Length: 283
Image 1 (cartoon, rainbow, N blue to C red):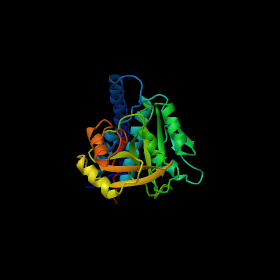
Image 2 (spheres, one colour):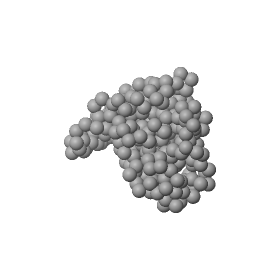
Image 3 (cartoon, rainbow, N blue to C red):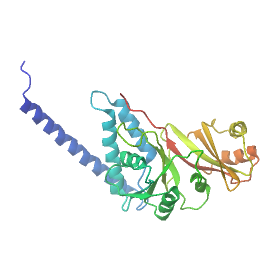
Image 4 (cartoon, one colour):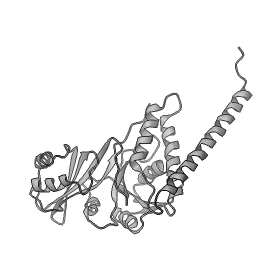
C-alpha cells in the first residue's frame, strides 16, 4: 500500500484544524448558555472546576505532543471564556521590579487576553481586589521572612475582603522566569473543592503557640492534621497560617472548637481560602 502523499497529509491537517476550530466555537456557545443561566454580574471564575478539568486532560494525554502545551491550550481557552463572561475582568499582580517572575506565573495561568495591572506590593493588590469585584489578585506565597504579611488581613469580616482560591503554578512551565517561586490567587468568591485541596486557616494569638500545641488543638477540633504552620509576629501579635487538607468554610463550627482548644477568643481562627493541589507535568 502506498504511503499517503504530503499533499493529502496536509489536507488532513486542514480538516482537523477546521474540526478543532468548530469545537472551540461550539464550546463558546455552551459557555454562553451557562452564562445566561446564571445571575448577571460577579466574577465567572471556578478554580476548583478548572483544576478538575486540567487534571483530567493531563491524565488522559499521551503521545509526543508536550503535555505542558496541552495545559497552556486549555488554560488559554478557560481564561478567555472567563473574560467573555466577566466584563471588566482584570488581573492585579504583585510584581516588584526585581521579581519579574510573578508576571510569568500570571501569564501562564490566565493567558494573554485578560488585562494585567502591576503593583509593587501585596497591599496594592489587595486594595485593587477590594475595590473591584471583577479584579483577581496575584500575591507572592507567604514566607517566614515577610516583614508585612498580607494574609492576616483576609481574616476580617468585611464583605470586600477576598479569599485565596488558587495557588500558582498549578503546572510548572520549564521556560519561565518564575521557576522556584509560588503565588496565591485572590478573588471575591468562595473557594471550592477540586477533589485534592489545601485549606488555609489564619489563627491569631497574643502569645506564641508551639506547633505541637496547634497539632493537638487541630485534632481535638476534628480538623484534618495540618500540613504546615507559618508563624509571623505583627505588632506583637502572633499570626499562624495553618494548612490542612480539604476546603474549610469560614462558618465551619470546627473553627470555634479550634479556638476553644487553643484557649483563644472567638473570631481568632478564620478560614481564608483554599487551593487545588498543583499537578506535575508528564515528561
